Image (cartoon, rainbow, N blue to C red):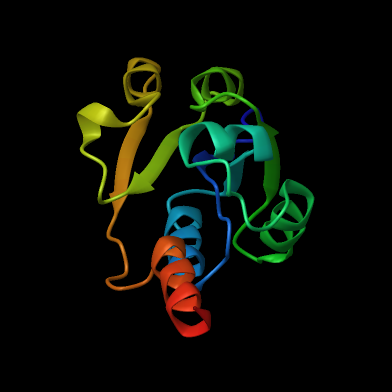
Length: 142
């Protein structure tokens, strides 16, 4: 795709319970280039970075839902706690993360910039998160 002149955008996340914030974020990421590749934390990876009760939705189902979004071109799983190895394989032109991440803390930012790419931080939608959704469900049913 790069040989065909397409710009590759990469982002990653757990995308455990897909919500409007995720959809808006992925649409904004896709707008940064021609092809959007989403690195999806595997179930094992989610447990490493969240806790043993997560993910709520299995990796197969999360991948299926992400793949159905028009903004997403490719979804690939990774087992590590962070996507650095995957970023090094994909070699994206644009690396996108949420605005809640400082650029200095974005895994792979240095690699992407050293290879002529750029890092874009997308503003988060206030009051929408998987953690808040889980909290609301627990409060409603406890």
